[in-house]
Length: 596
Image 1: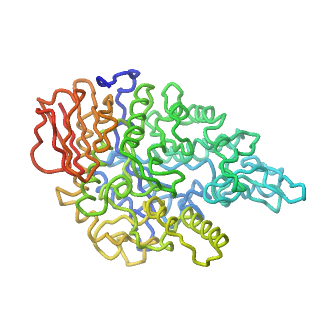
Image 2: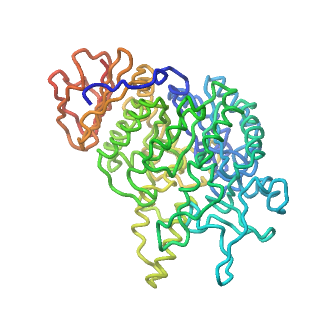
Image 3: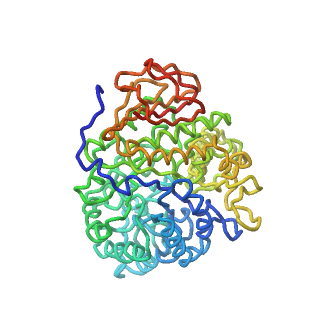
């Protein structure tokens, strides 16, 4: 690009709170345990609000705390109005909202309405009889039969957490129900207007009336299925059941449903924050951008997964990648959202992915871990979009130790994947103890478990996770917590935590970070990720050395005039390097941000 690309609708650079805020995701079971029972809870979150406010957090996205059997760690909700006892009470959440508002912070709740728990009253009623008023709140279908009379599911769709069918047989009513995830998570039927109205009135408006400030919408692009539920294409001939997403991701009525939701609920609360999770949509910007175009009146932002899949898809089958691939994906979403007038979500971590310093950085030595965690922070804080930080990311929490056995991986996706592959290999080889090293490598690199072990607050035996008592945490604390924790970093000006705090302040002080038109420099460079941001009269150059080697980087003309630097920030101490010569010497994993 010869110059900063300024093609964008006028509204792209219009200021808004949802664009400028820093949103911090709390995974409640693993954040802070206030009562000593080994499980994080709402009072634990309240106890850390001042820490989060001081860090620079404006909004908390709270993963589900609703009543749940916990088959899928709370994403199987049995009562949207009750708080699960392990997390506290409804009064605790009311107090959380009040304490956050007192600190000028907002709370975004997780809205899980593609599916619910099979223990939710809607489903309990639905399965009583075929004429029950709640029957059509879910997807029920009669069986098929083979030529030999064998009963078969209605189609060949596979569930997400295993290689099994997405349909479960119900003996009482002699029909199958659909579950894209676990059999304990039946899919809600959004074709039914009564179901949609119940979601709007009984869930969304109910929580907004209690003071909730927005929603993160779980797998929201799955709510519309092709009504005929046709067989999925055969991608894996050896598998009985196939990936269903051609007929249930970004379905025919999804935008109609979200526009209705906007009219019924969202538009009546202009300061709401909304973000939709949109998985199973690979490398297709045009499919996803309509969700966030302001003229469509749907959502403000989405979580796209293309960047998360640069190191492999399916998730637990990792692959190596080139920096140029990472840059291309990041840049395309920056530029195309800019051109179309949509808005990005900027994130590298959440509760469903492994730790960024282990995936995209280098955690092999303490020095590299510190440097690359800061580098990734600098990158995220200078990209246009709403910024998300996941608990522990600010102290460079890393993936679980490689010597931990499979028993420590307790997520249902990890356990199911390992068990199914073990069974296959035992059958194929006749070996009762087949080689599973490649499966463990995938888990060690990308399992969801890495994001879910307890937050490391200090160097005490359980990392300060429990505020009282010495109960064993629900998940094993990382072995490195004595060296990597909040208490050790909070007073150290050179720590990762201190850098995140400085970087968040820098982002708020320089609107080119959030709103700046983006131009990638030297897209084929496999060592340095460099780009320019421009907002009004401010111009920003970002240089990120993604290698453990020193790099002599020749600045292209697009880097602009660097003779009058007004501000800068970087992950190394010392004076700003000389930039006027047109060449800059970047140290290993150095991040340098320069404002002119």
